[in-house]
Length: 98
Image: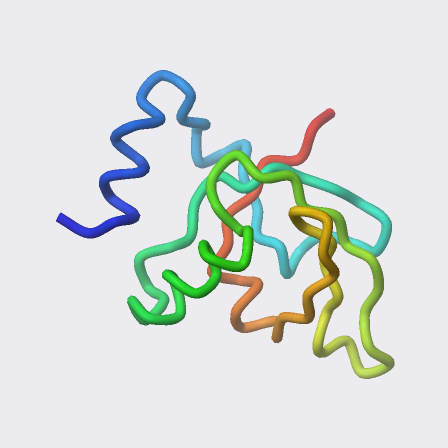
């Protein structure tokens, strides 16, 4: 069982339905959301690195700004600003608060 699968099982009742989620890549500048999961399609080393950087389930993430050609995107998570490519941001499922 992978690390991400174990984390999903630990969330249990706190899991959010798929219809209520989107990806970090789909958020606009200035918006914020809560990380739901790092998708299984990411390479294991990439998924682990994203979690280590703070994109763990339950973390709040804000979109700070996008580069002029929309890639990379600067996010604020765990008190730090981090740049991710859109392909990496697509691997992070988030829930936007209404």
